[in-house]
Length: 238
Image (cartoon, rainbow, N blue to C red; front, top):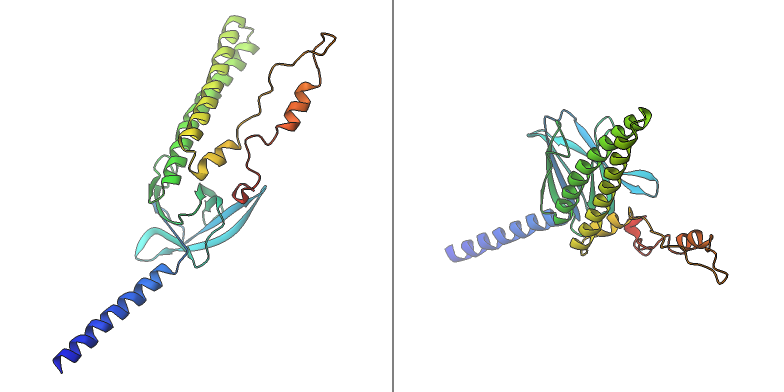
């Protein structure tokens, strides 16, 4: 009798354990975000499709864990660039969704990007590292542009010339950083997203048989190679 009771207990334990596991595993996506100092009772998940944004889900704050929200669903999210928006529909964060759809973000209302921490998503770790670095470069570039404008308006020709050179160098630095980052992360969806920002560079214009420069070459080359860095078969980039 005791053996029968023991067997039933063991079977019950495994049944409950398996049922619980099945319940936990049925979610195709589960994105947790913990926002220190957040007062929102609900936040929203949206994605880009072309130039538009579409609401995909909403998450209420966990009453036992202030500032914690969990987006979850039984159907996988389409891959792409997603937005987390506040209760007032302000954009808080952008991030990437690919095959792995169970991860966690931790951040702070003081500075969402600066304080972001990522768990279980190498894709988004690389994404936010890139955004942080490129944001610093863009701030430096903006400062140079402002100084150049002031120098030009003040007719400080030598200073303006020097600043123009610095601006060109900074732009090249940003471009090279992006190209290297794409190569470094070529196995990630991130590399395809970053490739969208790459510009097609037109080579030197060739000369025609009569020795004159082919003036229409640039337009033709740009038109033929417009999608050079874009994989048009990847729906995640739409």
